[in-house]
Length: 445
Image (cartoon, rainbow, N blue to C red; front, side, top):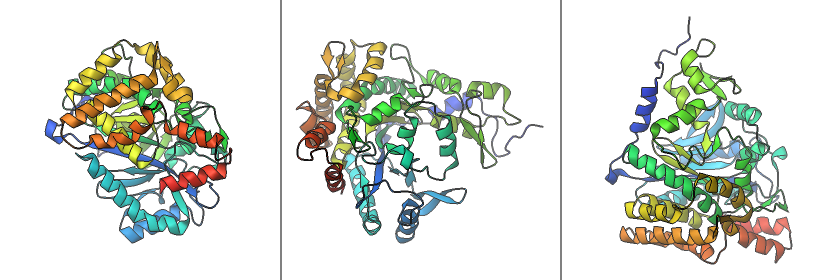
C-alpha cells in the first residue's frame, strides 16, 4: 500500500501552476523584499564563528531569542534560526546569518527594519565578540575549517552537489537577494527574462569578494565563481533568454531537475539524483507519492540566477555594506516596477543573445565592470542601467533615487567595491589580512 501523507493530496501539474498563479498581486500591492546574508567572524582572530563554540552561533541565537522574545526554528531539536512574526533569522550551511524581512512598499522601511534588527542584536554580538561581515566570501578561513550546521538537508546537499566549488558556495559565501512581485503571468514572464539579463551587470557592479582565505584570488567576485562551479543542473539561467518564457517553461525546468531528497514523516529521504520530479510524479518513490510540499522543496533546491516563487527572487549579488544593499533594491525597483524603464532596459540590451549572456557569466567574476559583452564594456552598460533606474525612481516621486548614490560613487568611476579592496590590499594594507579584517569589521558595524 502506498504511504500517502494524510494531510496532503497527490500534487498535479495544475496544482503547481495554480501555486504560481496565486502569487499575482495588484499594482497597489507590489512590494520589495530582501534576503541579507552575512559572514559571522570573531573580532579578535578573524576566524569564522562555529556553531558549537562556547561563544558560537547556537548560544548566540539562544541568548538573543531569550532577550528579544524570538521563537526557535529547529531541526531535530537543534536551533537553526529564529522567527518573530513574518521576520526570520536563519543560518546558511556555514553559519552565515540571513535576515529574511517582511516585504515592504518603501525601501526606507526595509532600511529601518535592518537597522532595528541590527540594533537589537548588537549587545549580544558585542558580548560574544562577533561581527557580521558585509563581504561576499570568507576572508580568512576556507571551507575545510568551517563545519556545517546541524541541519539534515545541508549534510545531504554537501554530499550531493558535484561542482568543484560547491563546498565554497555552501560554507564560505554570503549574498544579497532581492524579491519582487508580479501582476500577471505575462508580467512575471517579462520581469523574469529581463531580471536574468540584468544579473551579470548587477554581479559586476556589486562585486565584493576578491580576497579569500587570506590571499588574492584573481577574481573580483570569488563568490560568483563558486556558483559557476556548484551544480549546473540546478544553477545558472533557468531559461534560454532567446525563447519564450512562462510559468509552464519554469515548471518544466524544475520537474526535469534531478531530485536531491524529499522529506517524509519528518525525516529526509536521500534520492541522490536518481530520479527527477517528473519521474516522481509519474511513478512515485518507494511507496511515496508527490505532494505540493515535495514540489516546493524541489523548487527550493534549484538555485538559478532568478528563481520563480510566488514572487521573483533575484539571487546573484555579493554581500555588500548596507548602503550598497539599498542600491541593489533601488536599481531593481526602479527598472522592474516601471514599464517605461523596462522598455528602456530591454532596448539597451536588445542586441545581445543568450550565448552572449552565458559567456558573460564566466567573465564577470574575474573582470567585473571591465568584462565585455560583444563589443561593449560591462561598465558602460551598467552606467546606463543606473540612469534608467534613477529616472524611473524620480518619476515615481518616491524619494528613493537617493539610494543609488552609494553605487553611483563606484560605477560612474568604473569601479566596484572589490576594486577598493584590491587598491588597499596592494597599498596601505600591504597584503596584510589582519588590516583588511579590521577595515571590514569597521565598515560592517
